[in-house]
Image (cartoon, rainbow, N blue to C red; front, top):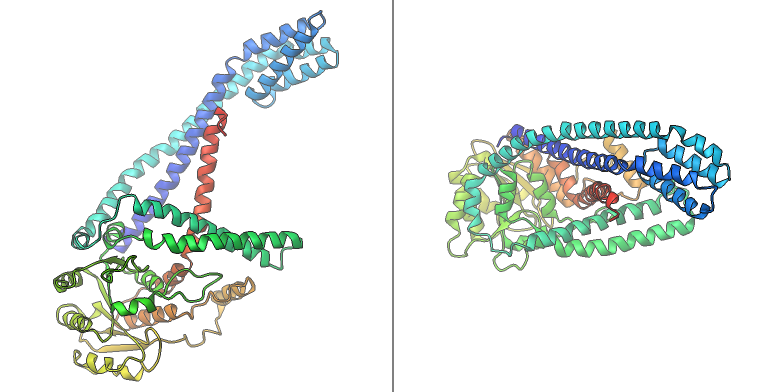
Length: 505
């Protein structure tokens, strides 16, 4: 599926979801209006009982008549529209309470006409709300067809590679991912609310009493203290497998190859604002998702997959044919260099069988012999040893032009990062004022992403959103938490509106 068609599919899906929600809301409104009209059909009998009670109000059964008046008044307050017959009944009951029964009788002289007017108004509301429900239900139903067709087309685009990968995905109970997804979303909600509350408590611009600030701070810290461990426990257990990620996205994937020994360094979580939960690999995978879903071979025997690239697990004795097939089906190969023989076999196969622009190499720092070993596979020396003297993770990114000439881009702090201008500078200043100074683009993962983007651009492959996607990946917990709060609020309002007339809420 092309990027343009994928964007169109997302737009149509979003419009369908919004139209469906509005249609449901309008349907509930129409149902409530219909129920209100049906309940008001008893109004003439209730009015007659009220008038009869007025007629007996001066007699010996005044107490009984008064009780009838109060019951009728309560019924009209509950079931009649505002104004009209409700106001008439209320005024007449007030006069009767004051002993001015004659005025009460005069007040209800036109009650039948008021009831008919209210009934006409209710009929009009039912007709209007029903038309509005149909007005939104029809486009929602019509849009559902292309939404499902585009979803099917998206899944079919990745069917071949998903079929290859699915053979190497461990079987999990069907309930495992849904259960931990629910737990993850609960953690996202707690995390977002805790972050917002702590930030509010620390703002100097809000003139809150000290007691309120302390309560906000304690409540926010408690929400964070609950949300963070929930997320750390549930997120790895709810992660998509490689096959699920491929079918959900539909594009050709990015194949991420590296030494298993590098996973612990890539899984490191750097400082974030106010609490970062997302690893370096998650941010790198978020940036590479500008091309497609990122998949990787998982370490054999690991109890839980590392977060970032979606994992699948190959047999240790027959993995090479599968990797070759995946290289052919992937649109980009990102390979972390190291000392393992398997890695250099992968470099050689990519060099021999794949287009040059398809390969991106991540060179570690402080690892001797990598530059010399790489130059054995290239027609032109890379001079990698000149830029990989240090660094604890990745020191350089290498891309290739069509003739396999290496383009080496060192990883480091962006020049002038402390002198941002324009919109970015204003956002950074606001973040600093809010205590979010660590929300910068100078984390190790962002430095690597910038180098990857520059390396690909040097060989004519452009993805402008890579750095932005890495930033979003770092703030996923806040974004999902905020989305959860909004979605739960909308759903709660819909359920509340539906159950309120039945007395179930």
